[in-house]
Length: 165
Image (cartoon, rainbow, N blue to C red; front, side, top):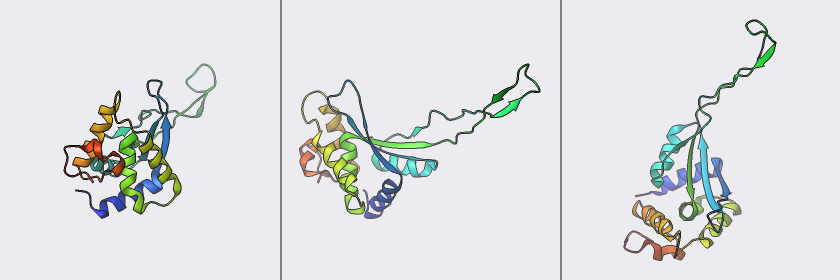
């Protein structure tokens, strides 16, 4: 069960490192709402992931290096090598109704109209019936089962779960 301390901690992380965006997908009618946090500290992303039952994503650039120095000793022509070490980064994301539910629970701890606006837009875009509604219902049930309060406007999607509300 999520505590006020858990929600306060998450709100602090989201308010400092959280970003919202719209992901366009030609197979969707609307743009997908994304709430994301990136960090070099794996423990932060692990805790966010555990709290929302989501997987951790790592940066695809890991292990890439470029060297930038003039080369005149071992190569037939002078040129520049580039070496840049990119630290391993981790990312937590929730999308659509999951992002809306997370923000609904964090709103008492967050400041700024952008969070409220994003949450409202995500709730307005909820697909309750037809194609796509299965994923929506699954997300609502998953978050409800692990202790997240469900916004009244989508409470009917958590049917069969006494923890919703």
